[in-house]
Image 1 (spheres, rainbow, N blue to C red):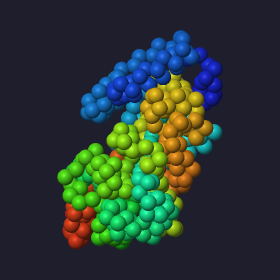
Image 2: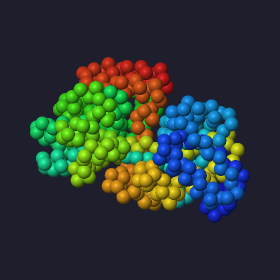
Image 3: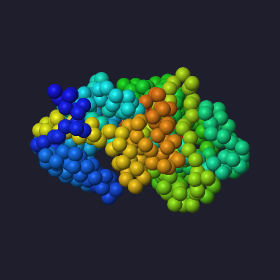
Image 4: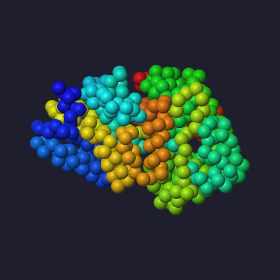
Length: 404
């Protein structure tokens, strides 16, 4: 009967209570969350919905407490490894029945990120692409095209360097930006499944596959592909190298587009491409940090909660909440419409159709926090002192033995 109720959630009138805790505390996300509660309430006038919005940083410290005692019916969180501790502790409900049927196809791009032990433990509600954002006018000036393979990627870079332009800007003062480079190089060298096993502690950091990833990275470092003194810059402080034409591209999330536009780059000057293949034998995986809804295992109103989650991921709602005047990100439902923005449209196509390997959550979400910190310190050190690679990998392997 529960499955039938879910299938008919749009037409069936729910009653009773639905208690939601949300970390969508910034103005735009908060408006989106409040709007969803209002619309779902209008669909189910006999349902009493209580929404509590908690500051995003405070939420991170409170979630384990409220999942353990006095659970809400629905709670926001994140996909991948960030949900693993709560799944392992039995604090999140198995919601695999929500994914049955056509929804599993519509949400195929994010299913892997929501799956542990062959079961789904929540639903996604928004994500955004990573990739290479580049100065199309500079590429055009030197006759370069978007690379589909590693050799073209490097030859483009050499042409730029020969003309006094750095291939990539980056700021590694805050370590996570180097994590993005490791994610893509490792997924392209060894594949998505290998990458996820590594971040789960199942593969040694001294493995030959990891060494091959760093060898590929070193090719770029030895060429001089990256801007100088990148450890002195945050990601925002590294933007002027690209806007000023001193560097031609940035491996970054889609959130970089707005400041690049605000700095004066037009959409004729700015473009995007998917990080190219390195090893033709592995399918392309992508970084796309995904925000999620879950049902705590201690929830009192699970049927109402499941109906709400199923509605959240419906194509129409996904179109609405991810529009440019709302979250300004990507809908997780492949049948949704994407905001009329060229970067969102291209990102949606990449994540929905061109990421057969799988969707990673980003290094510091896929690895436990302590491991992520040690590893990203190593990535930054490697970019400055690549000869230290053996010492770095030994240090990371010792950390793996201690942390997992």
